Amino acid sequence: MKKKLVVLTGAGISAESGIKTFRDADGLWEGHNVMDVATPEGWQKNPELVLDFYNQRRKQLHEVQPNLGHQILAALENDFDVAIITQNVDNLHEKAGSSNVLHLHGELLKVRSTANRNYILDWPNDLNLGDFDEKENQLRPHIVWFGEEVPALEEAITIVEKADILVIIGTAMQVYPAAGLMNFAKLSNPVFYIDPKPAKIYDLQNRVEIIPMNATDGVPYLKEKLLNLI
Image (cartoon, rainbow, N blue to C red; front, side, top):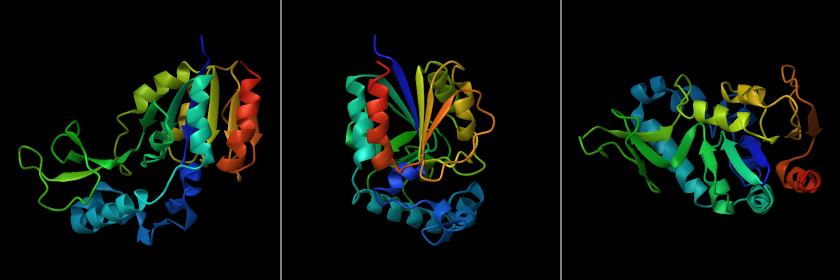
């Protein structure tokens, strides 16, 4: 039976494919205040701005490709039972070939009803005011904004609890509740943390091996270590 490898990924792995993260620029995300484009209040105040912002992000996503980090994680399915839990809203893990990906913060290429969060549609192109669900409720980006609950959190906790090996890639471990997921790993299991500027992890009791590299360098290095654990 293959060992259960659970990988938590953050913005750092996607940044290497050219997707910018708001944490790069003092709270600005592609020139916008995060509170204006990633909160329920921003949506209520100016839905056209929010829709345009995510339309631009969607167009950008069509132009980028998975990097070596994404590709090796997908290839590790040959040797491990891999589950990826990502804070990212892009589809780069899926494009690289990963078959088991849980998106904590939603997905850029999906939309949902403003009246029913379970009414979700694939949506690869622009979303505009006047795009409705079947009951004529406005559709919105399928993104978990700041201040909203994370529906996938309980599923993510269950996945981490079953991990034999935990890997954390490209995250500053600052956004909760995602940052707390690592604390559900079994204490006896190894944890690897890949980030060029790794955050200090104070509250994790497991043995953590820090790999101070970006994803495209760190994931190939990690692969060799993991294959020795089979």
